[in-house]
Length: 81
Image (tube, rainbow, N blue to C red; front, side):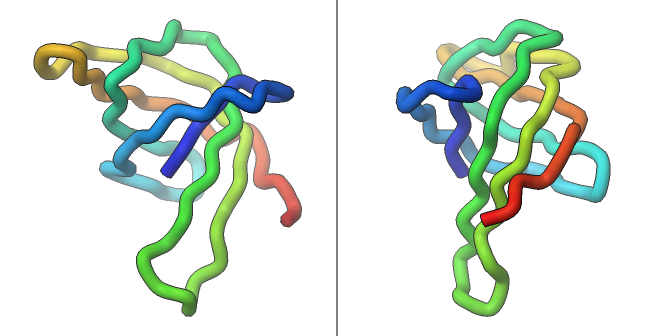
């Protein structure tokens, strides 16, 4: 998956750990401030499921290693592709 600030072209790579209808948890090399709005794009490993673009709000960011953060966020809306 990738994420960026809305309206920005600067994307960051991340690894999705958990996804449900209201929340997402992912790992990133970058710390993200709680309350920050992000646009995410999740590309599935197979072609059966289409990619998903959504707007999220970061709830918390916890360090889990050197230059690695576990980020939890609420899904605010799904973007039509």
